Length: 106
Length: 486
Image (tube, rainbow over all chains, first blue to last red; front, side, top):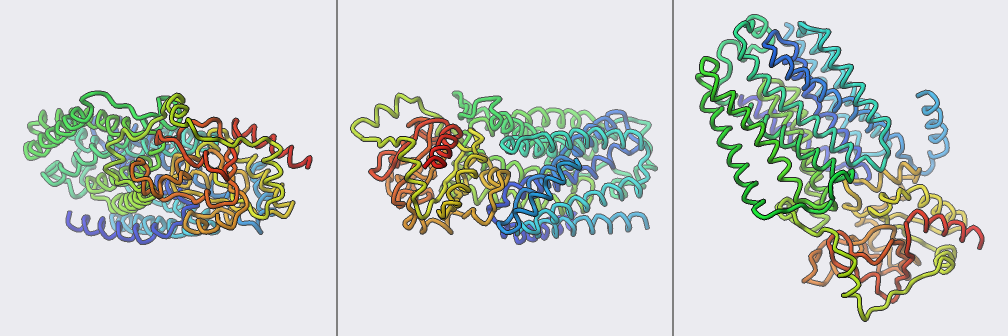
């Protein structure tokens, strides 16, 4: 338990350090991206739902798994969709072509 | 061996998350960073599936497919203007998942035929005794934070999407009720923790404690968010983001899973940083925001009454067009009104047109413009405005003095000069964009209605201000045509 607490505190410091430097322009993608990362509960949901346990715990795990997967898949995809729109001035023309291409693919 | 392998994979995943977040420090590397984090997540999921020898793979895959499909459809379909509510909704799902996993930890001891052997292989820490007092604390924390995040996020979702009123909702005795519900949650948490030793032989205190806690936490989430008004949503969304991370971390403590703890801590930190930035940008304490009841839309009547004796200079389309077309430098200040009117594409078109004529165009973005952190930036990026034309408040505030026109589109409180000196103003001390220092201020606005804070904006009555009334999008379309015809 103490080990886990140490890991938690250290990770929080790393988080503060890394995220303080994210510019305002990227705050929305930061939020949706980090939100997707918090969907890591998906791992917990898999463990719980996959265990030989009672019916209750299986169903709870199953719903948890769906919710977590929505969070993870949706979060990363929507962040990617946003980030592909952010372009600097000089790269605009080729990037637009790339976007059109991506649109036809999907 | 397997445990080591799985722990190593989790470590790699956590490292990828950190690298991914680090790459978000620049728009150039951000997309790759997000993909890196997504890859880390994939690794963690695959490792869990294979190494844990998950016993019922069909249900697993069904869950992954259903959730994945819903998430993918939502992520692809959503309009950029609806991004705040989508982020809030995803947040809510994360909180729900964390709480449910912790609840399942309790539930799985309730069935007698529960196979201890499989459990031992999966979670060595809880081999014999279901959970001790410390673990019970982590379980209740996970349930509490997770469900508050869930219901709070969906109230925020409703407010942001306009499904429920964006105004603060306050009824008599609300604070007291919130306090009671919070106390009730604490008591039910106490029940669970106190009953942990006898569990699962004596299951009732723990089971009913968790059930009561779940109900109370859901109510608490609603009560905490509903008194907070629309324009304070950037703070709420950031804070809920932080909670969803803390919920994941708490679940990590429950399952003794490092991947959850590290990621949860990262997200918790990220949300807290954003929360702090948003609060500072409004010069209000977090407590003040959370107590709620701030602002709300006042009726038009009040504004008209207090505006007596002041003159508004209304601009015609032609005036406005000439003002912009013959300027040397124009600074565009977008606000929530631009998002509501979905006028970002017209803004870009106007800026392009002006730039073709040799006008220098910059954008000034206030940190709390819009309904979530970075809201304006995403909308303008969608309209293909290069991000290097977008300036943060501190970078551009001194430049207004050299600008010929400050074009304010749907922003109000963040440009109210009263914030600088009027001690009686509710927004006194809030850092604002110095648009009033520009030679001319052109304000595109529907009416003289006060902003979210409910106070009227004296900017509209300054001698160098020109008002162009109407829907932002329509006004911009007309302006663009007018300038083309010049």
